[in-house]
Amino acid sequence: FFSTGDSRMPGNLGLFDMAEALKFIHTNARTFGGDPSRITVCGHSAGSAAAGQLILSPVTRDYISRSIEMSGSAWGIYARGAAVANYSLELAEVLGCSAKIKECMKQKSVEEIYQGIEEVWAPVMDGDFLQHPDVMTTAAPPKVSIIGVTNKESALFS
Image (cartoon, rainbow, N blue to C red; front, side, top):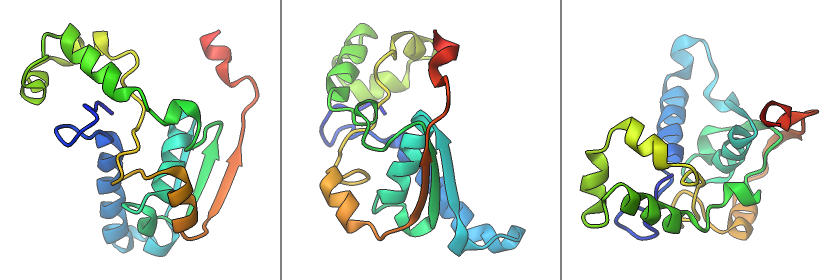
């Protein structure tokens, strides 16, 4: 979700990748016995936030009929990266990419980026894929969502 907070690198590329997958599934569902009008997205934790964002976003909501969201929310503080631009620019600086960020970052190895990526993962309200929560929740047509939590979810990290 790397973002400079402006048009150079607006962010949410992970969500746009998911959008491409949903378009493919929607277009080809009948080919493998599916029904394009009954596509369900499902996720847990950060995946749950993504599922919620996908069902609300104007970019993807027409490809999805329902969602299953476990232990995460599209509007949880961790799922709305207001500070992503700051973290992204900090990462770019750590990697020596303070000028021509996009071109420089493309030259970095996965290992180099992974070492500095600690907090550059949250989606941003870019006005394209993700709009303000009030806009998205009122503009998106009502759809079935199952939302729940799991017991001892964070036990793995304790």
